[in-house]
Image 1 (cartoon, one colour):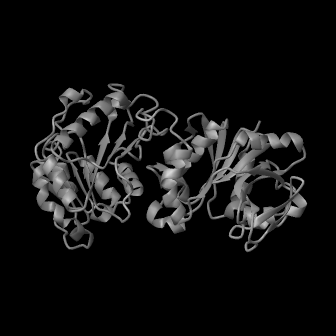
Image 2 (cartoon, rainbow, N blue to C red):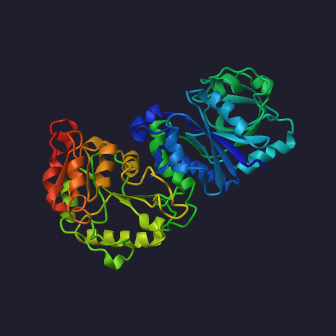
Image 3 (cartoon, rainbow, N blue to C red):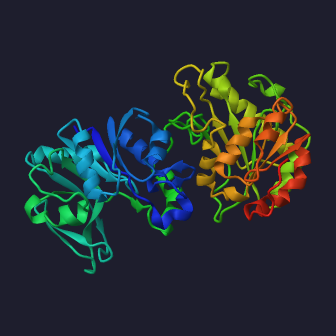
Length: 465
């Protein structure tokens, strides 16, 4: 049984730049979750135990998100310091494999394949070095096709030959020592320069399938993937549970309540405790949620100006074991009810439970999502297509302002509710020409600054608070 896979996840996503911003293509958001999370979930459901992520461009974004474990999958990393092509990346990653064979899949395509069945092909061909998944299509002209004789691929035909045919499905089963007897350049294409060029010599085994397939690297297909892929890979737990599409395997909270905006959109980022609701020490009881005056008016005014509304909140109480995610959900549900009574709502909620003095597994020093780090803001921008340079953050602590500046927001608004008064001097000192900070008594007083966000991006305002 084959239990390992290599995912070629070093792509830049040039054609999806508006969707993935500065992230690797494998991190492109599909219904609020990175594409790679769906691929890993599917591999896990097929009995795999270990995955090698062959990464390159912005590899730290993938490592920070997934870490070394995803469900039951162990994750290891093979990092290319410069682009090596798919062949060079595979050559570098194969030594990380522990067994004789491993699946190889692309980090920007999805084939809903029966991996166990594909692995069983090896039983009939003990000397095989490569198995290729082939899909039957009615017209292979736009793809190119494989010529198969008695389950062996003899050659690959170039694009242009119309009519039914077998096309490469982008999933392979290869020997760990596949390249041992070959001289290869440092940078090359796995498919064009090796598999297709040496097909007559390699005689790859053909594994025929009719599984659904999609390539998210094509903008049109990327839009289709938003609904197709979630329907192909249902959540691991029933809808509505904490692990549906909100609490990720990285233990970070992403609650997306709207679809990704088609155009870059400015946002109003709101801290929760002490800004949206009355400050309580480790708020976990929904009966204690009290909406602060002016918040509904602020949200309504921002909405009228075309701004998205995003809540970002540190939740150290989870790290310290004071309350659980279920308590957090009840508080958020109550907050949503109170906002709905006033005719407003937020578009997304991001929460970070990690703290440097927390209990395991939440004990993490300087987690990239925990304010003053900008991780929650950057994640929201990536998933929702937000224009950070025209966005504003409202908070009651210095760490809020620090996160806003690190994310490149237009400016910050420091309220004197919650912890605001004790942090007022620090907030005023932190303000700069590059990141103004306005100090107001309460959230409703921030209304006067909403129209100036776009102006700050153009450098028309550079005043300190």
